[in-house]
Amino acid sequence: MHVAAAYLDYHAHTPLDPDVRQTLFSAFSDLDANPHSQSLQGERARIAVEGARSSIANLIGYAPQDVIFTSGATEANNLAIKGILGHLKKTGRTRIIVSGGEHASILSTARALDGEFDVKVAPLLRSGMVDQAALAALLTGETGLVSIAAANHELGTVQPLAEIARLAKSTGAIVHSDLAQAAGKIPVQLADVDMVSVTAHKMHGPIGVGALCARRPIRRLLSPLLNGGGQEGGLRSGTVAAPLVVAFGRACSLAAHRMVSDGQRVSKLRDQLLSLLMATTDVEINGSMEARLPGNLNIRFPGIDGEALVMRVRDEIVISTGSACSSKSLEPSPVLLAIGLSQSQAESAIRIGIGRFTTEAEVIDAANALCRAVKELRAMTGRLRAS
Image 1: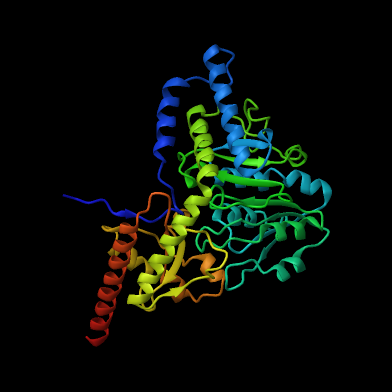
Image 2: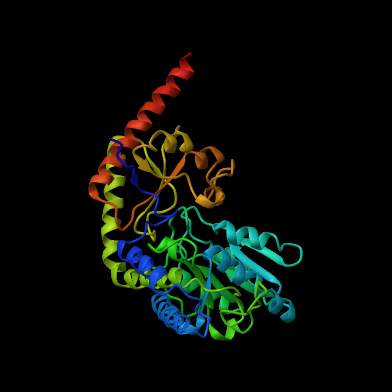
């Protein structure tokens, strides 16, 4: 009988919480209507959508009217950057700053604007933290937008976002943060952050729904990416998918309730896994273990190709070498290169994500599988060199 592999790739996707799954299934039956319709069914769907909007706002610490539903964090990131460009041009603040550790949806969007806008990339320290001295040097009176993710999608590094935001705001810049990895997992101070992006499937909600949360003064400055019926306050045309949104709201409510207990439990399991690995084989940690998402491990085994290791253990555990959004790329992780790793070091890295449904037994099995695979791969390498 085939036994399912233990799932340890929570940064790529968090499995649906059973409570959220039931909410979603019920919503597909009970809210099968257009929430923008004036029918009674449409009104019921609209009320449910607005309830979910409040749940999302409560988790993030924004007002419900700040929540603009999207298809996920990638669309939200695009709306945050492209939607503010008209304002930046109008005010002459044409410098955009992102960090070297951003998700592809931020980096590629920003780099596509280079030439038309003055795009600068703030470097990372070896720890994975943004180099705040370098960031400060990049900030000028012409800086219009600074976008720094609260937590990195590969290293799990949690940035001092409050400090970064205050620094950026001191020059009059608008501040955006991608919260895809942080929302629902750790508390984030957002008092000086103007816009944040969130996605449901990174907090045990469904794939295909997310939001850009923009405070009212900034929301007024945004331009939509899509033309259409003017839904979501004119900023995101298209019929809102009520079942997905309601399930998203439920996921946020659960995350708000479970954040502390989940964080403590997965942090303990993460540390246990690292201890088991270090007791058996050579392991090097990428980035600092300080200020890291509770369930994140990004490590490398010297002399072992990360992709080969992932493939070798795939029947037993699900892990990855990095971001699922760049898994088709043949290039090493730009995040790992940005913290100063060599190409060969970056190519040996694996990313492990422990989450809500991970068990201690799975952690022990994962440690055994990884150590066994590393030993086998090293033996193969030794034989090849000897031949």
